[in-house]
Length: 409
Ligand code: GDD
Image (cartoon, rainbow, N blue to C red):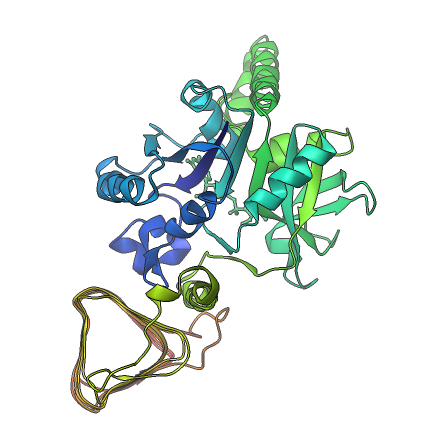
């Protein structure tokens, strides 16, 4: 039997995702019309003998109740949210719930970060892991040398794929092969985490001998139950024939900022062509809008037949898209109204916002730049004939004049 665990974090994390994480926990923000966490969850469906999926986080339970029950029904695999009372770190989090995770005596445990965008080649990883042996296999991807320092950089043996060296976000370049935040472990991972935290406890006890040092260590070190998977487990186990790597050549991105959510939405829409073509709008029929490229339209959204949508557009529940509207590379969230002849390009339009007639909301479309994607927070009102370029507008603002390169607080 196999179980999967998805780390969803909590409200004190994901702050770079503001203002979009002000309304909804980041893991539930829609990419290609589906909550972010839905993509790794549906990838888990392909794992043979999967009996249970756990989401571990420190958000309030109620934030996930609805989603967890609907996805359990849809997949016919039980999905449960396990709430930590405080952050325990990525390894401490799973250790905290080891009894539940081991409940069905799984032989293997998948562990996935929720804020990565990938095709999640999980069955392939499982096969690779079985052929390597050891306690775990890490999904690896090649990135540009300039961006590698944002991730865990690693070196693997080119023939055996053994993990030889691991450094988390190093200041000087080590390797362009990085940790994708997707792992498969045997239950021995719990022993490895336990060793780290009991080592820490021993050291803390030793230090207590001298009260001065105890004071120092209290400010310097983590609590004994806070264990990070990367620094505390992967680094020390590298080169010990315990950890192996599986490199994906398919797409992989990390989703820390609103701009990246727009890029990842496009990647998932493109994937739908193979995995879920029924979710893509076709534009067939005389009453339908003109559709170009990959587009998702929620069944409850109303799109005028004279509108032109796409490529890469996701339109969420109850949105109303008026006559002559043009949408390119954008995410339109629930209950948005876009009035006639408005244009939205390279932008994210927040819940309940409204865009007036002949208005333009657009950006250069640079996913990594601070103002590279225009974002309207919840309930922003852009009046008629107003132009908004390369800007971030916080919730509940009304714009009656045009703005460019601005953050409106
Ligand atoms: N439940 C819970 N509790 N989840 C947590 C906690 C915690 O205490 N801390 C982090 N997470 C979740 C986050 O929500 C995220 O999904 C994942 O664990 C990793 O978050 P971080 O530990 O903040 O690391 P990171 O995202 O900056 O980098 C990690 O992932 C990269 C790939 O995306 C590292 O493992 C990098 O090496 C890796 O390249």
